[in-house]
Image (cartoon, rainbow, N blue to C red; front, side, top):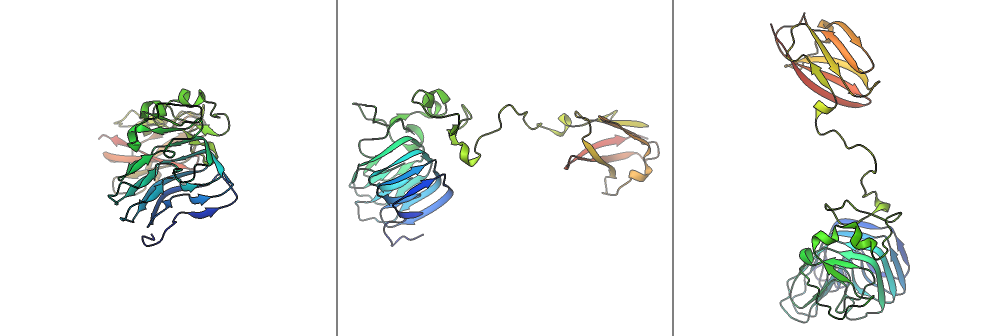
Length: 297
């Protein structure tokens, strides 16, 4: 938070290489030339990086520069990276230059490849995703979330493309221009934008989802019961510990008769219990579950 200082960002000047660096929920405030990851770089290489959060340019005098990822890129390249940072300036002047990813208006000699941005740009002046001419190879921005329309009429292979949110959440959008979903990117189609595998942002593949409710893990029957109850669970060998508690939190396991623990079930006799609500507590491979049952008298 440095509202009186120019050139504010996580890295003020980069002259080197960054691989696999992520900034989550950052809040960066500076006077002018403000960004989240890098303010400026010269002959540098940035690969598999991302930023989320907010960037605020405090200067109100005009000619403000700010961006969600890099404010003033120079010679170098940024590959396989993205930003969802919101970029905001309170300046009402029309000579400001704000960008959701990188602002290359002043020094356009850098290359962005396989990058995207989705953060809103809020302010007056020129607003873009990748600079005034949207120069970025096989890269995209969300026209809905950024508020930046795609006005490039003479599109080339070196032009980034603005797309609606629905298209930005399709794997095919990125596969068409050779994004690497084998080792670099993953996507939960229709629900989220591409994410970097290096940061474990990808959900498991071909792994069953967690059960939605306790009923899918264990079942007690009959419930209510007057004599014998059976707790069943889907996988053998899951149960490590079995306890019964009354509604006051007192353990009554000792009053349970004829307990039989099998591979997929537990049978027990509740004849000695008073009528009321009880809770079966199970330790199943280190995970603890509680299931209520009723004893009738």
